[in-house]
Image 1 (cartoon, rainbow, N blue to C red):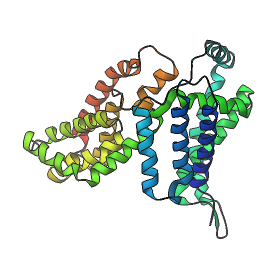
Image 2: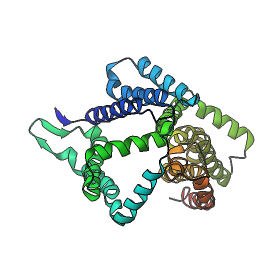
Image 3: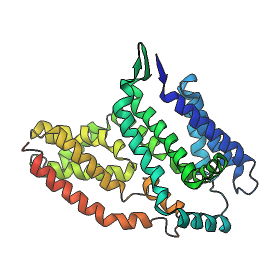
Image 4: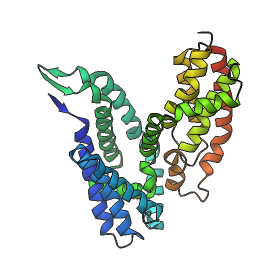
Length: 320
């Protein structure tokens, strides 16, 4: 028996999303309030219902959410200059103290991940060892919220309003990472990796160790650019290029290959609008005129990091 499960936090997230959806539905200043409210209500349903309903029901909710986003029925809240001025003044007043709630979240996650699974009272465990990371993340978010309320001296109502505003500003991009990661799993099960292996073997001289490394790192970066998520690219490119050519053909170290391969995928993350939560959401939240400003700033570093990964992998993966 366990006292805390990930489902508890999923349910809490679902209730918050549902309350935000109701709030949006009642907001007459929202330019697309019906579609936006429906989008967040459906997302809330996926959290609240979860395994209680057939997977087809959740899939139907996701399809409707995609249609709402594709038809531009999901919109950010109307801009209010007085709100922007107030937030700027508050940020100026609080200064670096605003960072402490954000820093507290990873601290709690790391500490909880190392300790929560060990807390037991006889046959009763505080957390299931398989869900310790998710539970620690939920506790970290609650701790960060409590710290933010204390630092800003705001009430829960303000947190709810600001949280709803941020969710609307992020919009459909919030669920893109999860959907792309799921798509990567589908590609892996569909045998895309084998197809990639056949194409690479036919086009490139993979009998050369250096070519195999370049092909793997380039495949991780390019597939991540297309998918927007290195976790989605990893199973496909590793099964298609990494394992057959670097590990099996040339005897490379799979641990070194996997670590540097993921880093190569992250280089693709830095330069793709498909990684909306990293590259588009910051521009939306900062209300920048150029939605691709983050990508333009990161591109030179992405290229340098990719070249570094290729060099280090070639020097290490066949020698250790």
